[in-house]
Image: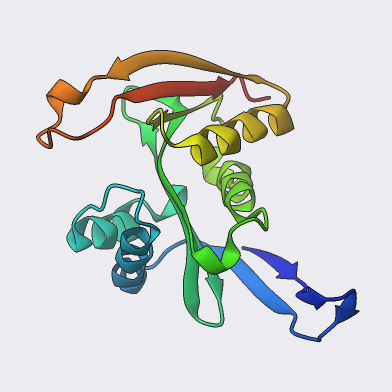
Length: 178
């Protein structure tokens, strides 16, 4: 578990509104609030509430929630690749509007890859749609922080999605991670 402290300043004066954001593994009971967080981003694909309950229960070692004042303000869902245990696939990264621009998404990803369960991870994979410039920037920053590269690979074309308006998803791989 990692604690991040953010100071809210006005005119250079500390207003003593220090908030602590705690990074931890999700619990089953977090699933509904994670679902709400994803829904409120208005940019991520919203899965069923059941999905977030199940991922919080069965994939908790490779997911991270950020909590401030008992509210979930950030979430990363990820899982180890079933055919290649050296790869972790990051499915979604969500940050509440109140926390954007503070480096929380980067902290969530750093927490994930620093866990004991991820010590043998050599590559991070994710998919990003072309219009999601914030995610591209986040993962480029992660690659730079890790001193490695980010490569594009497979495309998931819109014609395989049931929703006709879905964008192409480009797969990115970050690594090797040392």
